[in-house]
Image (tube, protein in one colour):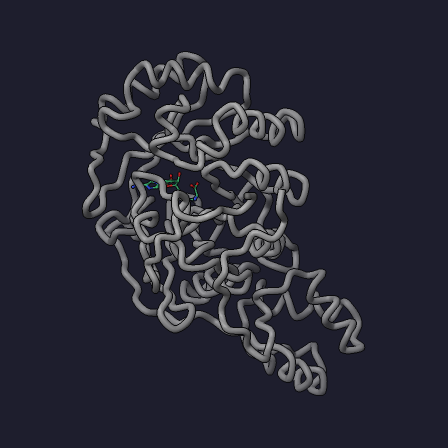
Length: 376
Ligand code: SAH
């Protein structure tokens, strides 16, 4: 397994380090290099993340001298808003500019008792899933840790809350544009900042990484950090999954399910994985598929989240009928598998699952079929 798996293009390096890109350990190291005590890093992180500040001048427990020196090394660069759309159901979608021509999308989904922020991890995506509009674009580049984290900060600031008193965001899901585990080196520090008490301070059950099934990186994630995992299954057998989720040709179901077992039963008996299953009319939504799915999940601790397909221009797929979804769910529940149906949110502003496109500069055919992917 190869550790460095970054796509070729990375953003232009600025002279200053964007603090959104450093987890606590990295920031402490930088302060040590400046001859400062490690706890200074903790203080700075609290200003940025717990109190949603972005100006060194506001950091009143830091000496003026250190603030001046910090400004010589660091910046707190927030993303530029391109557009904001608000759905009838309260869902908000922000298009955020990253650099010259690239923009990504971040979606805020308020619900009764909780509010989820759906964040992007790549500009475009190389996984080429047949039913996802982000896939149509191919991959332009990985996002940096700073760009990933800046989405969360931006959302909290825009919503007028923080992560200290007025928690406007309770859950984070890596379900925006991109395959998070294909950008592991940037995503891991981002997860650490989300979970850190001096960062956003979210509990491990409230941060969910969603993957199309990059087996080696599922194993690394399990070793490196404690976070919730969702697996985009979408089909109960290899023939169908090869078509819908082409990464399956590289990591077929037997390998994927073995990795899921390692992530749950072998790591933590209480953990479970949420299996995402997009409901495509006449393709994967028949009773026999549900029965096959029951067998596939075997005795694994599992929840299945059925996602009614969200259409986008030029797609050949249709959303399953509500009766088909209900019948599918019943077969799972009869076999004691928890099955929920994801409520479609924000589809009037193209903010629903699989509808995020951002602005991906070069539409090279950087897709799974065309390029070598991480782990090759
Ligand atoms: N790359 C990650 C995160 C992507 S999106 C992954 O594959 O898990 C989050 C979920 O939305 C995934 O389960 C994805 O398969 C699903 N999805 C993609 N396109 C969709 C569509 N058009 N309708 C409904 N769900 C979709």
